[in-house]
Image (cartoon, rainbow, N blue to C red; front, side):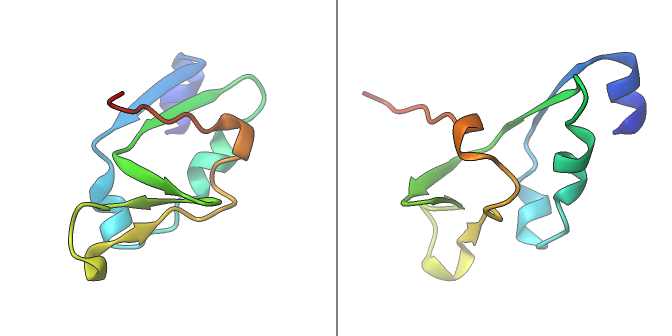
Length: 82
């Protein structure tokens, strides 16, 4: 991640759902996305109140919640079908 951000100030990451399934520590994204470095996470999920639920279409036992401190409220965009 550090090497990517040194080469480019903007990195887009997608298909990271497996990281959330294993509940790995994702604070590295927040730590690295500072000082003119930006990381865009493309994640399928559903916004529910003040948090985002991944695997929202699966059974509730498979739902994973993105840690609230990972994404600042004003840095969250939601795409809808409508």
